[in-house]
Image (tube, helix red, strand yellow):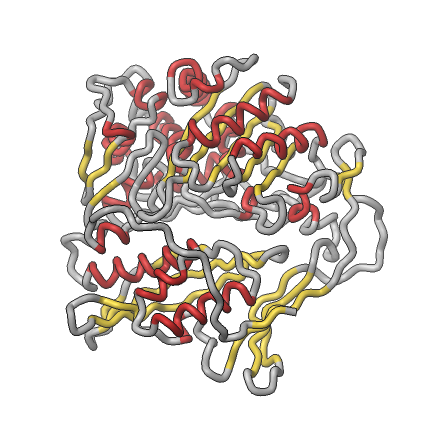
Length: 541
């Protein structure tokens, strides 16, 4: 049993901030993709009427600090720093919350000198699942003209108060017995990275996986007044034997060894079969805790250009040999740029893809309708539909952009586009085969998805673009491996105070893989060695 005690703790110190930049520039999540581009400027609210952009920026910065675990920084943005830090720390630690995902919604000008920013909180509770709820941040302008979050307990959760708190209760459950696709025994002992995965196996019953609940309790009496979230199904007394998974022990072992190339950083990897979506390996680093490979929420960076390219190629908006200039900078509400401010004058779209030119892709944004990228992701790649994998999963999100700046960012896998290694491995498999197959970890999972096959012409073009990325582009690190490998790198910025996340997706034979390394700086430099180690350790299928 864990409770939410309102007590202080000593937390990790914040890394020094990077030099300069206005508050609003710091707060905006910059648009970056493989090729390491970033955007500077005032963000999507610049020049718009409505709530003060500095208030909105401060709210987003507070949410970013809270989500990243920079609790002293988040607290410093409030009117009650000491109390705020104690509460935020005890809330996340007391409820075993790891790496919350906090997404701001449209701000509201309340008309009384305050600004309100609603947000959605997705709180991954270690070993159980994600608790999702909505709340609001009130912001008030201070005497010196700066905006701060007006501290209240209720902003953390609407029902948190001086008289009510939350308590996490877990129910003990027997470990799930599981085998790989060949009948070999799988366990968290032999494959440590599988521990959080095996703990959530459904096994075809309602009794699989651990159970628990978050309760709202009275601070004085400790009595539970309501259940805010529950996890796991009803216990079952039936013994159907070990759960037969789609995993392959050799691929799983290779994946876990490959993550050693992440140099101790948080990382995740998924490998799956292209022809049927069966998952061969799911690996997480650290091995225990949150299953970021399947349930994580990340901006996919330039690996998302596979989907963007599909949308453009589907409607004939561009062809691989068309000239699409790649300038050093492009301003759409704010300035976007390429890695090391590189440029490729007179580049073809093929060159733009292989070198991951952000400005070229953003320049093509007018070729797609406002919601077209999300429509293509859903209709052809299954992203955003409900997947039944066999364990709880996050199945992606591609919201309609709220403005031109956000649309530009979504073209390069930033903005509010969200994915994880499972999604990006599936995207890769769909791109090179033309057909989406719902990923599965156990046989017989329900499939409620409905997708349309990609035209053969588009599949051929995507395969050629991904192969060229290995032979002459940003994924050259895989070029020495045997087999007809195609790949795409990605780099996604998280915040001004964190290094970029590194991504790589690849395919060889009948296997597609995807890897993310948190704060890996670049995709080729961080996720690339992981993918290389994996493909070096297993034979071509």
